[in-house]
Amino acid sequence: MIQTIENFTKALVRLGAGLLFRRPKPTNGTQSDATKLARTKAFDALAGKPDANYGSRMAFRIEYARNFKYKLETKQHTRRMHELVSTEFNHRHYLEQRPFLAGLQTDLVNNYLAVGSSKGAAPAPWFSDKAYKKRYPSTRENPFYHYLHEGKAAGHVAEPWPDSVETLEAMGIDPEEGLAMHRALYEDLSERLETGELGKQVRLMAEIEPLVSDSWFRNLFIPPLSNEPMTALARVVLQIQEAVDYRSARFVIAVERPADPWRTREVDLLVNELARSYGPQSLVVLDLSRDGTGFTNRTGEDIRHVKIGKIFATLPANPNRQLVDAIRNLRPEMLFIFESDAMFTILQLYGGVLAQEMKVVSFILNTERSRFGYEIGSPHSQFYNFFHHFHRVVTSTQHMKRLLSETFLLPEQWQQRISVIKVPANPALAALAEETISKPQAQTILWVGKADDRDRIELAFEIAQLMPDVSFHCYTDLQEQFHNPDHAGPFLVEPENVTFFNMIDTLDGLALEAYAACLYTSDWDGTDSLLLDLAAAGLPLIASKSASITLEDGLSPVEDSNTPQTYAEDLRQVLTNPLQARISARKLSAQLAANRAEKDWSQPIISLVETASCGYARAAE
Image 1 (tube, one colour):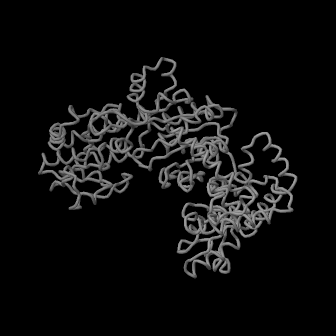
Image 2 (cartoon, helix red, strand yellow; image 1 turned 120 degrees about the vertical axis):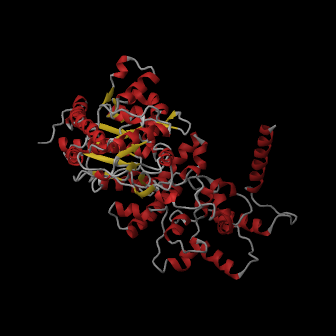
Image 3 (cartoon, rainbow, N blue to C red; image 1 turned 120 degrees about the horizontal axis):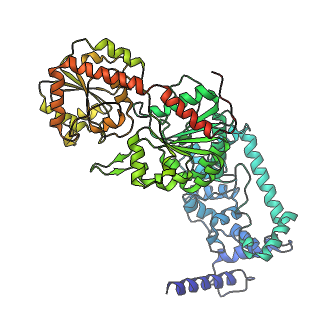
């Protein structure tokens, strides 16, 4: 039924077009005066002229549209707009964007002013309403009329696409000269297609493929301002090349998630090691976060760092292909990926291309859990899909390697491609443990973390309520939330013995000797650098079982990580015998220093790089 209706509609359209494009004959007065006048003028304009290369049918449509005008029974201001816009209006270009108007009894200028402008149709190939409103947002009337009426005299810019000026500036071309050149090239090419030898060749093609005759000018692109996506892409590519100093890189590191200094130490360690061993200019860090906060350079070296996610956010289309091109243009030997959702999407589409041109190493550092305890996140949703693209998978705990191997039933040869590289402890904190071991401690407990489901601050609150005689200091990133009377979260009720402080990203300046112990309630199963630093500093730890995953070096967690009473009992034992608790914590600190030395990180990384090496030499020590 639907197909029958479609065929009937097409037949009516063909019938109407056939009647419209005949030579006008005397009628009985039923045809409108505007239609008769437009048809007559169109035939007169074409009489005696050689046929355009695109054929008489299309030529008549353009002339008919150019000569069809309503008698405007409107306000004087609207008539003035119509007259001024008509002086520069390109009827052929407008019909290419709205071909369904061809042959209809429609004044195209009036259609543009009433409807077309708001639909994104451009009145001329050298002018974009969208670009004009973006550059001059205070414009309230029709952009093309505003430009012709007062904007041109005021020095306003007429662009064929948004960001044309920025693209030309990035190329080192004067925008005024570049836009004038673009318009001249377009008009010259249009003329050659319409009446010149170039158009004759296209006409011969149209005889073989009739569809060519219906798309003569729709794909008429003048680089670099070809169309809106290509104009924006040209600007982005030039910005990226400028950011990397127009040079390639041996290593590309892709990060995305906002930098949490306690949980992205692996990124800092990798950047440090590659910069130290192969030189700071051997690598480029691509920050894929849309706000540009995915990476913070803490190395002190001049690392090339591109906020590529922030740049791509300005593109009008999905930038997946552009991101692949940006990576390939750097010609890296190795690509390191840190749990980036954007990169997993890229691997799904172009993983084979990247794996053929470079060694792809993926860091999978932890799983994620829903509020109901189910494991989710990239290790479960992405690992198996893309493992065949990875040269190596790197994780920081034996727990994660076992989890991946058992979950996906990996054969032995696949398991050998998963490397466990332990994050080193901070050796400077061992001295702090020696200083604080004999000092008296107050009845105060330290808690540091984010106010989210993973760090389980609500569990810390329940523990504090069980110990009303003990003070708790909570360093968190959302402390304002707990003082907001409008906050509806039931578990965010602040106990009286809890004091909030701003989130910290280092132990420097924190008087650890003032605390009897640290409470760690997180469900994090990756390497938590905060936990490493606290243990290395010799602070007694009352921690969940997840902490033992990080500290595979001798930490004894609470028996039941989900019950606040077990934490409270262990805290009471620390408060009862603080000196013995400090001595035990000092032993753990010494174990960390011995088992997590800097060489235990650097040597496996260098070995990983050298196995994939193509002859590059290490930088001089």
